[in-house]
Image 1 (cartoon, rainbow, N blue to C red):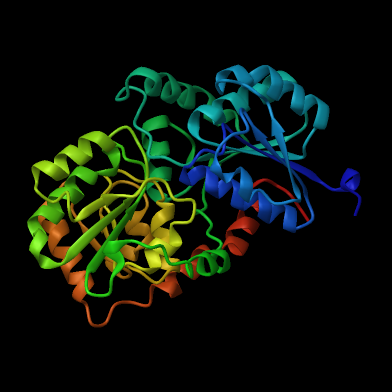
Image 2 (cartoon, rainbow, N blue to C red):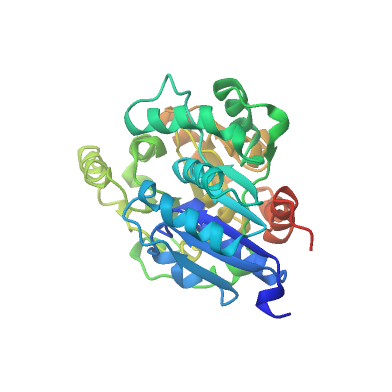
Length: 367
């Protein structure tokens, strides 16, 4: 079918920098295009490592704005010019701009916003977050539908933002299992990845909310003479302080900060245990990816989606937040478990085909 006669849908996100939400939006955009839709991936600024992953059937629309807030006039112009049948937006500040843009553009379009974090109440937040959260409380009800990535995120939106629960639908993040398994065949070269060592991997932004300080303390409790090695994949503002902490714990020679990896799956498949040490995590994509790679999983039972993903411990071990001793014990138990669960079975519940269909239904797009 000629692209002019295809149904047009849009996805609006700030950029394609290296975050889980950005990877998910690219996955959905490609999935929509594979179903015969004309798909516009509308970016406040077209930059980031996931640009290379955008499929040939997806058109990138670069609003060339230095900040998401400044993209509003150009987003309004895009909506008036292209008149997509539906638009999906992601990340709280971008969601607010999308809602305001539709109100100004006055075009007949269904707007679905997706909440991908664990938001605090407007009263409990501060600075930029306080402004964004107050905007969520005032504007989210003007969207046609709100997607929460986990039941806990839905609960928080209802309780803290006074949003009618009827308007909120829970749709978990999608993972492209076949692509992950193909990419997981890559084997990176690193001294920690020898067969004799016990390999732990963690993936995510190096920020306070991810709890890497607790993970480092857990490795310190396990001890450097035990044969455990920790690989941390990601970048962030806490990198220097975490490296200093590793030195102060005298574990700097058994921990390596690898940096952002566009393909983390080879690192996962070459390791023994995946660990999520977050203090809050709405729906951790890296955990879903680790399940697809068949990894043993240990996670904090933090607000958000980990307990939901692991079915309260059926598919992996859950420990209290900020408890380094419990985390250390669970890591060793998972590594030495003679009968770990077949987590690839659980990963199938998040396959991109099923999740993509759910998003299109929420967006009101009939194929």
